[in-house]
Amino acid sequence: MLIDTAADFDVRDYLRKEMMPHFLCPGCGHGIALRALLWAIHDLGLDKDRLAVVSGIGCAGRLSAYIDANTFHVTHGRPLAYATGLALARPDLHVVVITGDGDCLAIGGNHLIHACRRNLKLTCLMLNNEVYGMTGGQVSPTTSETRLTTTTPLGNQEPHFDACALATAAGAGFVGREVTHHVPKLKELIKAGLEHPGFAFVEVQSDCTEIFGRKNDMGSSSEMIMRQKSEIRPSAYLDTVDTPFRSNALPTGILARNDRPEYGATYRRAAAARKGAS
Ligand code: SF4
Image 1 (cartoon, helix red, strand yellow):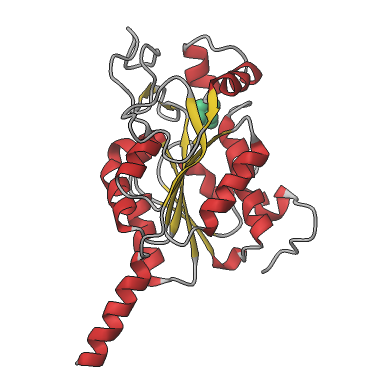
Image 2 (tube, protein in one colour):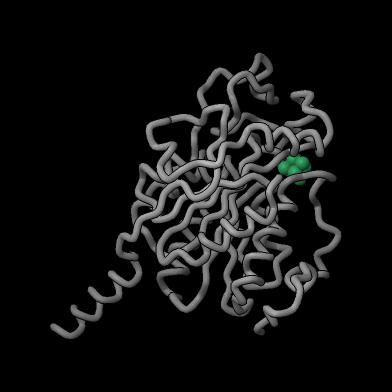
């Protein structure tokens, strides 16, 4: 069913009411990210019947269950693998992946770099809250140095990934980052990612208020979100590429874009040529 894009956005048009109340903790940034995604879908007038949302495991992974579209909640770290098959077999669908920093960069890290390299048309929304929130607050690949988690009681000693630099280096056609503090900007970035003709990687700097915030004495959810504002640095194209790990100042906006051939179209052309030759 097509939604009238001229009408004001009402998030309830895109949610499964039978799934309410949702499970998110009060103040969790993931709800803001979900709203921005649904707003972007509304702005673009995407047909919900042709929208497929695939998610993995974790607090971010639970979000697909609330979206009134075709949704798949799959195994840990594998949403990009499922989405790849879906997007290749059904190019008529708009395929979106929702994943968290642990799901996407730890157990799913291998799938991410190859999805970037392959450049199949799909949009990957990675919600980064620096922690495995759902399973009790373990360290993740994006946990900042010195931060406390249940598995780093002395403070994290490992350097953390800059996911956007990683995706750029792996060849993603579109790479961007925004924070949940700036909802209209986040919505516009997601829209640009959805419109990109190849693989789009969008990192959303989110907050785990209940587990990560409490553990690190980061204050209330509003104080956490205000901290995002002081850390961001709107960035020019490719500003982060020479930085292997995330610095304290977060570059935001569209960080990389290229127009490499999209894998699905290339594959279908090769298959048609092979069929014609036989
Ligand atoms: S545990 Fe953290 S990430 Fe998960 S819903 Fe609660 S605040 Fe959000």
